[in-house]
Image: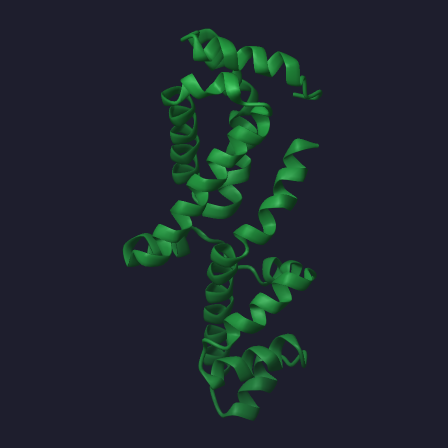
Length: 198
């Protein structure tokens, strides 16, 4: 939707509160793609993102009697999806099976991590996250990212094979990707909302 028509959407919510399934479908069509794009950036799984989207709109329908009191439909919808996404990530952090699946769904690319380091908050989080790793992993990551050394140069300095150094860096990037996905959701949520509202 190119123009946000607050009055029109409040009317739609009133109709949904009265059980109008057509109005509900209309709101779903207005928001499903934006909500999905928002969720998938955090959960890295299309199937899980679709499930969260479905659950979001199911909750809206279940609690439709509250809709006439909603002043900002868009904020209401994104509050629900934000909470469900946050709950998913919290559950993933506690459940090893879900965590393993989440990691498997992530594309481990150093550029993603480097893009995040442009943000001051993410830089602080990365430094904090690195403290949870062994001294060897911290050293190798620092040599690669801060000192700009190649895998071969690092290997010769720390006494490991080039392939082992590469594997360690991949493991650190994977860990940081997960750490950031869990811990930056509160920091990033406003920026994402601004992006999707524009």
